[in-house]
Amino acid sequence: MSRILATYRVQVRAAEIEAIAAALALEQSVETPRDVVRDPFVRDEILARVERIRPVSVDTHEVTLALAPITTGNDPAQLLNMLYGNSSLHAHVELVDVTLPQSLVEHFPGPRYGIEGLRRLTGAHGRPLTCAALKPQGLPVERLAELCYTFAKGGVDIIKDDHGLADQSYSPFDQRVRACQRAVERANRETGGRTMYAPSMVGRPEALYAQARLVKEEGVGAVLLAPALIGMPVFEELVSRHLDVPVLAHPAYAGAARVAPPVLLGTLYRLFGADAIIYPNFGGRFAYTPSTCRAIAEAARKPWQGVRPAMPVPAGGMTVERVPELIEFYGPDTMLLIGGSLLQAGEALLERTRAFVGQVAAQTSAAEVR
Image 1 (tube, rainbow, N blue to C red):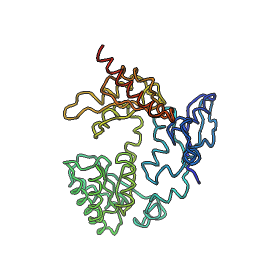
Image 2: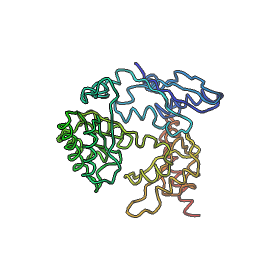
Image 3: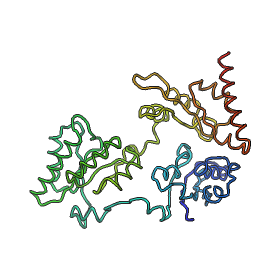
Image 4: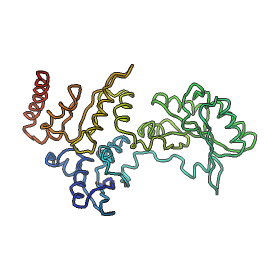
């Protein structure tokens, strides 16, 4: 079976790299300790393999893993998960290269038009295409349409919305698209040009699908999408099932790894509807500090008018033995997520699980007595 080859740049001392590489293979496939992998199919077909370790500098190495394509389910979200799901939480691990087997590539749309298609649609051959942006946001629809007309009149190939334009009160999506498309069409009639307008589509999936319908109804030539903002699975579905025009991908939010964990996990995930928020606890497989973990929990639970508190779920290599410490640190309004520490019990899993549950109950009761 052809495998996905994923290469990671790992910041670690040479003496530790083999152990780190083995742990990375477990993390990006079965997410359990190695001794839990007893089933022959899981061991031979699912478990990731370390293909290569290449030194880059004294404390930097490249680790290439061979991942099983079957684990992706041919789904964009699950593909991202298997490439860089949990391991994206490691500050010292960076995904730097991916090679996909053709059998997997065939399940995804790829560009519908590409370079040659864009050239054919715009009539721009033998030169770079030109593009202009409608800015600043805050302008009314009429002003944006005027800008569109002017850009098109000047011969710009593609006129895109600023990515900050959405469905705001000062420039509603449907009104803006109709006005700007008509402006471009008018300019094209006058000049004989082939300028295309690309409105920015952003919002919840329901809104995005409605926007895609409007784009088709109005004969709009292209669209602008920010995959990291709307979610790459939604992006993929829009492109493959709901749009038939060229798509410009915008990088907004693509640097979101630099968002502080308490803000991203504790505040934004809660705001967007998470009832429970899983995050890597200190002292486990990841490098979050106690102060970071406490801040995530506080952000998830603090009073916020109109927003219910969310349950913090510290996880990532937690063990049954750490239950007293976790309860002491987080208090009762917490969900304790433990996986491998229970599974290592093998045939004694039931007893180990009961011991875990009993220890949580006993520790909580003892805290109440105190």
